[in-house]
Image (cartoon, rainbow, N blue to C red; front, top):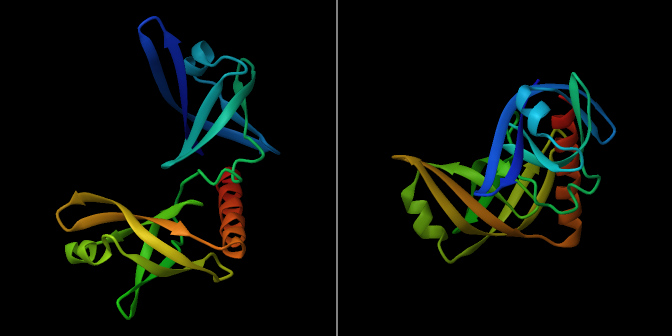
Length: 195
């Protein structure tokens, strides 16, 4: 599987960011083994940080080993405790129902994190209905059809093209609902890493 790797090097005139694509070789515990590319060979420094990406999901790592053919990255054990990883959904998107007025309206989730989610929309009128309004939501997650409920509010709108919108929401959850979401994110990240 192809993954992207991001490195940074600070020089006299500022920071240079390197991005390369390489193959994932294997995952052993928290160690991710990747094929070595010329950029990684030259600029990956043991002990420095890097980021690994699948589609649009990016995970911070630390470079812990390098040989002639591979580079080894350590994935932090507590990666999901920070709840900062945004998982982009590419298969079997969860559905979120937003209670707008008296109706529960379904939307397909594009990405999800411990802080919120993004959905696709086509109605500009929907923006007016959601600005400065908190709405109840219910997400149906995974094959187990587990539900998470809480309160959400609109925080960002991206117009990809005319009539194609991405709307991002912040969320507030009680502890039980947070635990369900963390478990879903942990399983989804593990599945991504194993693929």
